[in-house]
Amino acid sequence: MVLLSFLTHLAVGANLLAQAPLVNSLALYQNRATTSLEDFIASESPIALQGILNNIGSAGSNAVGVALGLVVASPSKENPDYFDTWTRDSALTFKALVDAFIAGNTNLRNLIESYIYAQAQLQILPNLSGNLSNGLGLGEPKFEVDGTAFTAPWGRPQRDGPALRATALIAYSRWLISNGDISFVTSVTWPIISNDLSFVGQYWNWTTYDLWEETLGSSFFTTAVQHRALVEGSALAEQIGRSCASCGQAPQILCFLGSYWDGNHVAGNQNEDNQRSRKDLNTILGIIHTFDPSAENCDTTTFQPCSDIALANHKVVSDSFRTIFSVNAGIPEGSGVGIGRYPEDTYQGGNPWYLGTMAAAEQLYDALYQWNKIGSLEVSSTSLAFFQDFSPSVVTGVYTSSSPTYTTLVSAIKTYADSYMSLVQKYTPSDGSLAEQFNRHDGTPLSASNLTWSYASFLTAVAARDGVVPASWGEPSSNVVPSVCAGSTATGTYLTPTATAPLPPCTAVTSVVVAFNVAETTSYGQNIFLAGNITQLGSWNTVDAVALSAVDYQAEYPRWYGTVDLPAGTALQYKYVEKRVDGSSIFEGGANREFVVEGGLCG
Image 1: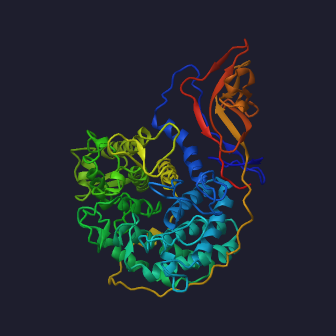
Image 2 (image 1 turned 60 degrees about the vertical axis):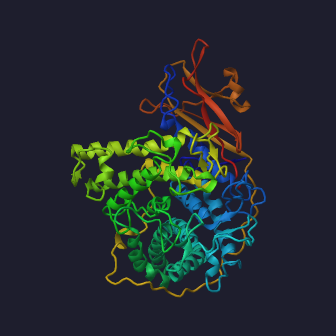
Image 3 (image 1 turned 120 degrees about the horizontal axis):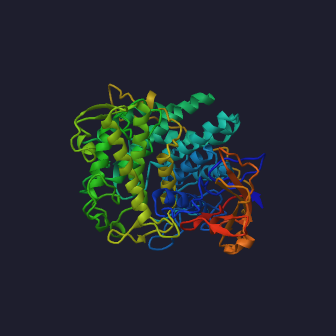
């Protein structure tokens, strides 16, 4: 049995404690709404985190046979077969986990370092894209789950993975440095990061398959994340006394990035010939993954979420799906819809994607954060149509946070963002599992089940909604387009990472101590208990319910608290119960609360 951390940082020495969602009031005597977005987020958040952990080797319940630290895209093995590990998906997933770790979920550290060691092994693995000697092997999109090369035909190379992996490792490295562990950075993470940055600097202007693995050309998503990686890579190199010659290509990548704006929307791809409209979800994904909370304004050169071109693009891309999916029928402009990859998509029938719909919400949450930080918003001729969905009479101009127009627009856009999440809620099954897509006609989940990227997208969208933002990647000092643009590259230097020794074998956690907290004002003789559908919680029998302690009870914060040792991976339902001096018991109103105990972790 070990102690783990969940949602809040409650570290005690070397031990960590899992925590069920905090409840501010029992509402014992009232029927509370059970289908609100807040209720959905509270119940889905632990499910999404567990969904990720289940798909990570070697202890994940859906990752049997998967090497330590590798992430499977999905446990689905047929129609479609996603039981492989993609560099891109893994990096995006672990960036979300690193951010959660930095925010306080410290039990993720061993898992993060398992990922780092696993990526060092993959960097040196010869594959059909090449090998490490000239860096070309870093463009290999995916590998077998045992860490060997994937040798079947595929859309290769894909040049976004190294940039995204560098970003994930840079975020962790900066945390290590701030906590006094620069040696791990210089000896373990930097050699891996350096190889990836060299690859980006050398091959950014070469053609690539896009993140959908279908189009060979230039992809907005790839270009955007490449620019970010070189900027923050340069800063890390300086911080640890290393050099990054390839990082000097960042201004030229930024120059090229601007060419994706076509005057109406952001072109998802360039230099390709697929007869598509270029309206593409990859543009919204690129925008949210290069959001910088320290950006000083709604900068257009880096396509910040609140910039007029990013907002105009959001409207064009969203509206392109408004009439083609039956699940979107009758939903007016200014309300969230199911978002697919691109309007012409036919994969699995062409459907809305969970991660796409949540990405649309996340961009809006990011924009709201930026407007609040700046203290104003600007309506330009470019973004006018976007804002008119919420205030038809609005005109171009700058509106300060003290103005009624600002208040009206911000409130409406928050509701708009939530409507995307509510659509995800509507089509999420009762067990909380998130597939890749939901059916365009009736919303039934389909394609790959338990998609890791879907779960990660839920967590990042919710964090953005809560105003929990990642660290700056350096946008304020890297948003100036050079006067002369050229497709230059820098020949990279590639060295075998020193972190080639695997971590000790993972011992799967079997038992977790979960903390339950509730704030409820009580009178003398009244006590709060915990009852649930499992034996450890009394199987709904109030006689065997778990007594909570009022040792920390204060008038200003009437806290009732208790811990229960539960099997890892257990899905449970529970309610708080008030026991009165006369011996009667009253369950709180509303639907049963749900919680999934973390599993798939190393002890």
